[in-house]
Amino acid sequence: MSSPRIALLLCGSLFLVTLLAVGVSAVFVRDITGTYQRALDGSDEWRGLDADVAETTEILTQMYAKVAIVPFRRLQPFEVQLFKQSQESFVARVTRLQDYFRKRDGRLTDVDRGLIASLEEAKRAGTRMTELSLPLLEGSTRLANGEQLAKVSSIWGQYRIATVKFVNVRATLQVLQQNWWNARFGEISLLGMQQDRFITIIVCIMLGVAALALFLQRHFLRLGRALETSQVRYESLAETIEAVVYRVRLGATRTLDFMSSNSLSSRR
Image (cartoon, rainbow, N blue to C red; front, side, top):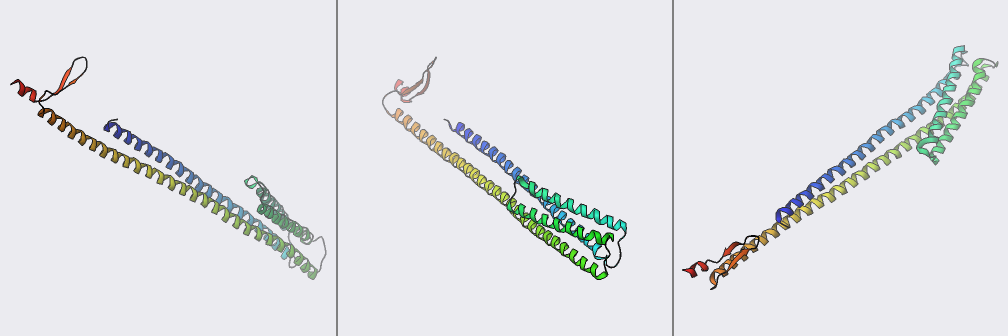
């Protein structure tokens, strides 16, 4: 194979390797970008969950605040109605959170079961608080002021149980979110390491091809010089011997490529 053909082959090889590197790098960039996007989407989801738990706790606090003022003034009917609506909203929110953790990632982990259990306990405490509060709010029972305070204290116990459960839920959510972020960063780090290894391999291949090209260039240069030296020696030998040395190219018509100069001197 001639030197120009080998050079062309090596250039083509470098071009193909470069295209492969660009293509695979584009795939890595796409995967890393997708992982970042999932991380951002997931972050919004975790913030939404935390906000739901905080709002549900706030609803419960507003419900207890209505109960706490009963010993000092009687609530208006519309306030009692707002209390009942808050209870319905509270139960609906807790149920929605439980359904989310039952369906999250298509599997139910021990942490999910713990969250569901905590939410169930909070819902029971909130429901019990409502059951104790409604007679007091509606004025269907006649209680002295001291008895009302004792009733409110009992209701406060249920409120306390529910709020503690919500605090536990929020703390668990923060741990889950941190673990989720660690997993996403692990994926990104793994993709980055894979990309670095691939780039290293591509660089090694390109350096190998360049080294091979340099070696072949030097090799063909040595061969060319050796051929020139051999040609000079051959022609020198042909001119010094007492004979005619010639070279004919065979073909449809024979062509004389070389004839020693001593053939002309012998004619003279």
